[in-house]
Amino acid sequence: MRAVIALAAGALFGAGACLSGMTRPSKVLGFLDFGGAWDATLLVVMAVALAIHVVAWRLVPAERHPGPPSTVIDVRLVGGAVLFGIGWGLGGYCPGPAVVSIVSGARGSLVFVAAMIAGMWLAGHAPSGKPDTAEG
Image 1: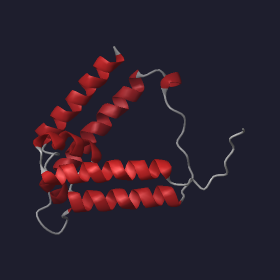
Image 2: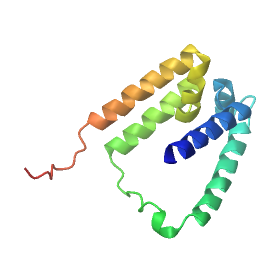
Image 3: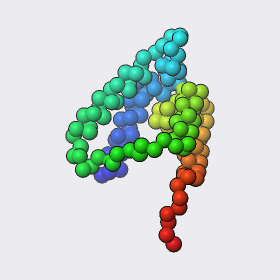
């Protein structure tokens, strides 16, 4: 049942990304172009997502909520944020819409997703800077 719900949620996300135009890098880059022909579409998409998220958090029992996020600001966090911003600004893709866009076969989305997967792999294998507490 969980797989069916995940599939339905993914399909709904993909449909929303396509209908809103967020799978087109020109939409995202237009949002980042404050000095030119600024496109507020992404702002509307984010506002709707936030509103849905607020409602969802009200409907989910408190004990099912994740714990508080870490408050540590370290090199990994800042480096990841910088890389995300550079990739978003250069490619015009966010991770979700990029994955949706690969079905189009557009070379830009394929390159972006490949780079994103490589970055996730690197992040999973990068030293954390925390002492190893494993006992053995």
